[in-house]
Length: 341
Image (cartoon, rainbow, N blue to C red; front, side, top):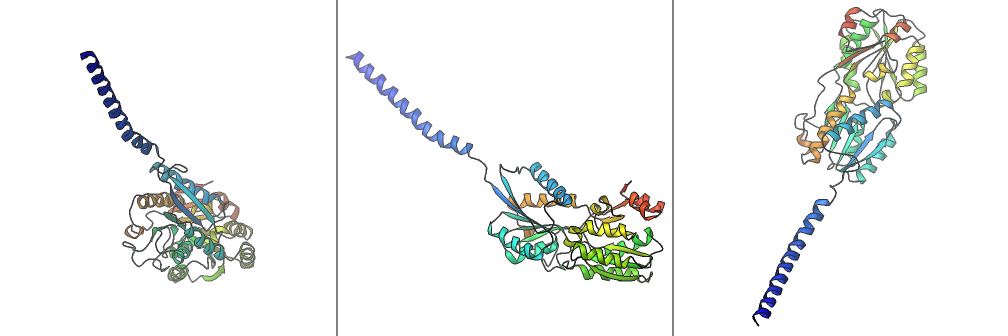
């Protein structure tokens, strides 16, 4: 009897231990399952006003994705990207803005001010980060750079005072210049600000100023060809989606007309333009990635200050200068951040 009772007691104790272990397992299994669940996938929309095959735009986005990866956001693991390419087509840009907003992304990258303006009309809640834009106050997107409020912030790459700087650089490169054709992007809200700065700088030079709308490649070519028929002319290219998209036509027309030209970004000079002075777009896209990271981690776009450019690059293409028969002053070469030979 004692043995039987002891056996029953042992069986009872073993059964209780088994139930206890089993109960512990029922608690542990969900914890393991939760630990193995994939990270929440975040969605970033990107609206570019360039063509998809644009090499400069692809370099910008490569830097953007690399920076995000360094910050812990890996495509396919915890972030996905939706791209749209407007190629300086205003109707397409507005349509893509509405389309991307309908996808309800966590944030949107807007390259250029017109893109940001189209997105503002489509959403007042989804965070929008401007990469490579002009002054958003002039564009009516924010009222204060330090405290933008709303859903829009980002990075300025140009300022209207550069209009005067570009004119001075152009005169330094080609002192005999008496006529300047300004190729501008009609969709750029900062256009008038650039013109005022150019007019102020021109007070001491008395140059003849002509404006050329960058509507499309063929019309730019015809306008520049006509301008080049008279001597002592030069070109100034203002920033904007259309001047960027049609830059091949602009650079080609300048070379065909043997016209010295100053451009707003280094990629113009890398592709055969004479000289450029402006911010580095790749660097700005890296900085834009840091804002996207902060937004994904809970900060509000309206609390992130709009940042102005901190450094401008002066780049000169000596091969192009030689083709134009120009002798670049040594003082200019010394100041250049890069000399392309």
